[in-house]
Image (cartoon, rainbow, N blue to C red; front, side, top):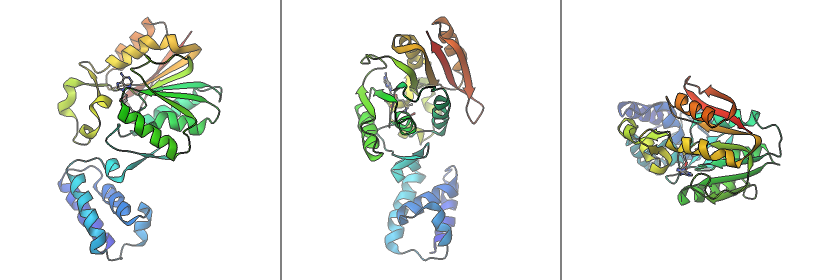
Length: 278
Ligand SMILES: C[S@@+](CC[C@H](N)C(=O)[O-])C[C@H]1O[C@@H](n2cnc3c(N)ncnc32)[C@H](O)[C@@H]1O
């Protein structure tokens, strides 16, 4: 079979198996197996594939059709223009979180700011900010040893190891310093919503998805704790779940944050909350 024929057959198969963006998935997997950039496939449509190339592709197509996330199969994910390792140890970073990083970047007035990323997962927020702000002092915490190990591998791969201090902590429990910015994409799914999650999402670690019966428990706890770790006038920036903004905005108002505002994601969902303290 030629490259084009394989792409067409794989796309049709993914379509039948209800895989979103079937053609894109097929292209990514074939490019991965051939060690090419996806765009380079277009220059080789007529090339015949060997059995040595088709064997590994068949295996990846089978796993993808059973719901394994594309990023786990590729082993990497693009985030804010950088390539991060991606596997079962931490959440697959989402495009919404790239938006959070963009908002946060414009809220950093001083390039030497001190920044804390709470629930760092694979390290995407902390490391993207470290790459953009070479003088910033950055710390990242997570409760999961697995996530911290992956984040540290990502730091090393991106030559940013010296730039971010990683620590194990339940929220701010083991954090002593104060920061100009605290940013967090914590778990925000209700345990009662497990049954509506896709097969792909269920490959993310439980600790990265679920917060409690409401879903907003951990974010609320952080809203409570953060004032003790925010420098005067510093910012708390949060990614939150669908339908959670009203309760969480009230929690921030009660706690006396100021300049509170929210922003929507690409789908028009209120996904980000910001507030200053002190
Ligand atoms: C939704 S994932 C986000 C990961 C990463 N920040 C991202 O945006 O891709 C939430 C992360 O919070 C961590 N986490 C869960 N409970 C926590 C807690 N109590 N304290 C600190 N981190 C926690 C999880 O291990 C997970 O890595």
